[in-house]
Length: 108
Image (tube, rainbow, N blue to C red; front, top):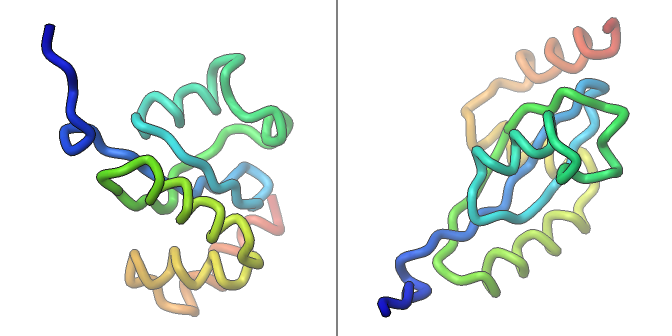
């Protein structure tokens, strides 16, 4: 029987934006499945159930589970402003575009 080595498996941390504009940070081995679970199944995080749908706004890939979990804990300890800066820098979003996005979400 073949065993998967840890180097053949990716581990991810991700940030999703909820319908109300709030952010949620998590860890997974399969981002597509996890986003689906958040939006459509009973396996999504209970803390965001009333704020669906969610959209993926940021992710990082790691080769070990320990690295991914360490990073998840680090990001979960950040305030909203720092998380938004991380997302902005990853996507090359200008601060004007980010402000406009936040303004549109406030109106919804």
